Figure 1 (cartoon, helix red, strand yellow):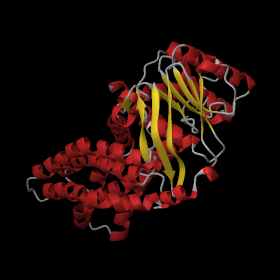
Figure 2 (cartoon, rainbow over the protein chains, first blue to last red):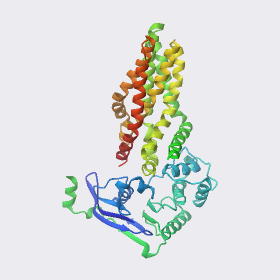
Figure 3 (spheres, chains in turn brown, yellow):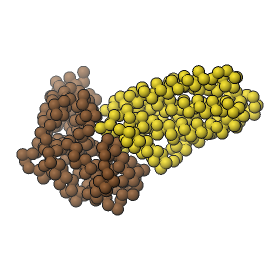
Figure 4 (tube, one colour):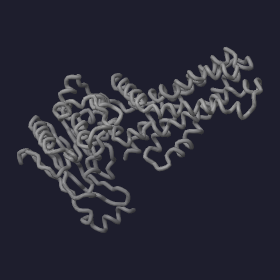
Length: 220
Length: 222
């Protein structure tokens, strides 16, 4: 279970959100919604432990993630805005390296299967610099296929740059992960086919909604 | 654990091989500086012999600084650094792997090339040997300390200048003891103290700097 307790985030002099609290049981799809500039990505980065919240904490299985550190990251796959794909490595090398650097193990057969699942068969030995934006996204997403046993996935706009089939495949994968008891946190405008009971939504208000008094606090 | 460490080194070496220009740039700079100094100073053999260790060491130091901005910048730009920070393996290990890879493509070639310069500057066999050993002990320290500077200035505009400013004062002791060792060998004084001190610097850097780099990287990525 992942919990946010009284999270406040300030970037520069602007308060993005304050006193944000929510939780998600295992087997839940948690969708972070809100207009641009309301702190969706910042919230995801806080939930990963990449960004320190101004106040509050994120708990994973009851423990503060800033204290759990590697213990928490063992249970986490994060795919952010940046794909983490190296131009000068081939598709296969990229996947292999990103899996191993993350501290996980995967056999060559598993890697090949993952690349097949994201539709990159035939591109295994292509340098990533020759791939399209959508294909690069697929290389990043292939990590999910070798990380199905990892309980928590945090995905920042995972559907961007994907074509219709790519979107469908990813939705199916996310739905399968949730049915298997995993937790997926994502920001997207795409519908994912999951039962309403397993769905949760966190709405981040518009930037103008922050009261002026609080906004002044933020400056101090 | 060791697997991740080895994987990082292999990855960075592979990238270095595929981006040859970056690596050759550093080595070329080293060769140019060392060969151009005698042209400016004049061909007096005794003078050249006495300045040789200093010239080689200064060139190695500047070449190391030149190569620093690349250390984390690419990983930062394409998002692989974020993935490293979220690894289930200790970050210190990953950082140490990156520093080792950096040394393998900068410090090690410089050390090997210095043998040629030992001959070119007409250094004795023993002096050349001491110079090579001092570089072998000193250049890893340059890579490790440099990694701290590179991590602290990651993502800043004009970070290159700032890195040099941060790192240069910490490089000075290495430079003094490195070229001092060769100087001692030339005047038949015992040079072991210099080399032992360089070795101590190295051990100190191996223990301390990966941890500092880890902290600096986490701050830079925020």
